[in-house]
Image (cartoon, rainbow, N blue to C red; front, side, top):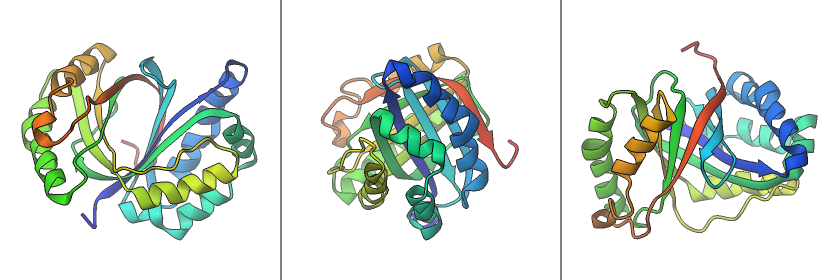
Length: 233
């Protein structure tokens, strides 16, 4: 797993009077700042809720996971832009994952994503069994479905997530302290109708019970708003 790509994920929400500025910050500064100007990052995307508990969802991909634990990114988090220092304290919700992309079947850009959150078994053997099942039995056929353009598995790393979360809290953000390993499946498709069906079929309330997932996965559906990829694809 040492060479896995990294993915930073955030769910954010603010009060209605500040909502327009939050969207503008994402589209006019933050996505570009991460994708283009933060060492080791190469792609960032911003989404608006179609059917989800939290209004905004964003993903930031890195060439390898070590970028998210390195000094360069840590310095950026601790020295935010002036606009970021204004926005972050206004967030009513700031939920993040600092994760390894242990399964990466993503490519291109789709119009919508499903963000599927769930708690895997907390032991290595149980996680390997679940990871293998998702890769071979769930994701491999899923990416062949009409309209599905990609899927990945992001596994949250508690130490890194809590370290960067502490810096966000220092700016006034509402980032919680995490106590359990959580996983995220991101399913990308051409429309929210297609991604809804793919997520529902693969991650129903009892779909992963046999693999140690005791609680039903939480599925959020989002529509693509803006993205930047320094590689040009």
